[in-house]
Image (cartoon, rainbow, N blue to C red; front, side):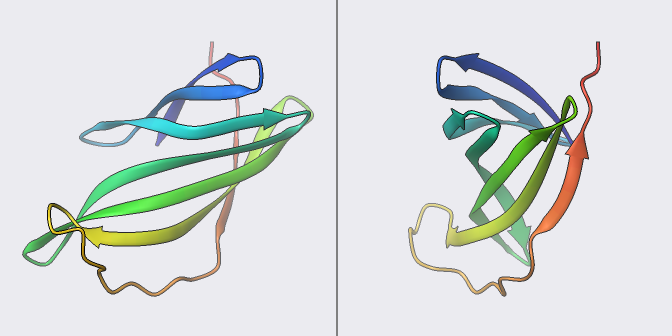
Length: 99
């Protein structure tokens, strides 16, 4: 997983890059050292494709971005009906800037 961020004032945009796709960042906000944004990923669950909304929240610490990733919702792609998922504890990780 890799990110490309673009900040304009308090608005955060960019993309999340995964193994086989890139996904735009939406609802991104920067407020001081705090950062929040959402990514909607297409995930396969058996024979179904689900659109899963992932919320990232975090803050800047010593030049690194510490983020918590949490599944917020999941819907069946195209049908807009809910899909079953178990929310669990968020995953915490740190991002370092690559030049």
